[in-house]
Amino acid sequence: QVQLVESGGGLVQAGDSLRLSCAASGRTFSDYTMGWFRQAPGKEREFVAGISRSGAGTYYADSMKGRFTISRDNAKNTVYLQMNSLKPEDTAVYYCAAVRTSAQMMGVRDYDYWGQGTQVTVSS
Image (cartoon, rainbow, N blue to C red):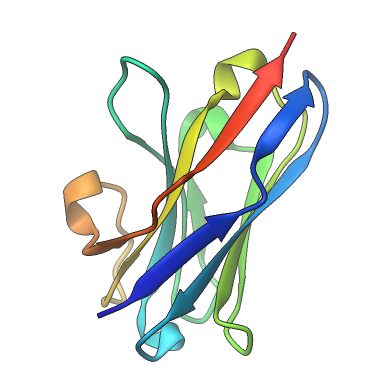
């Protein structure tokens, strides 16, 4: 089992930046591909960004490219999501997720472990 705990969400204004963190415990963190997803009210959960086990490979949903950056620190068992130039439409609950694989994963069903989520609200 892998336990994931997100933090760093909050209320910000449009154009601001925010960094989310996700602390993992339970298994060898570097064995897991990590991802960030988000879910806005009334919408399906959607992929935001993913990162390989070593951190060398990252990939993003098209709408997040250039504004969001995913990274990880395997020594700290933590994955991050740096979000810049935030927009009101970025308002959502943000979740981190883990799957024990070396492949790129972008589907909700691809991931086995999920955190409880952290709320990000962007005001206009």
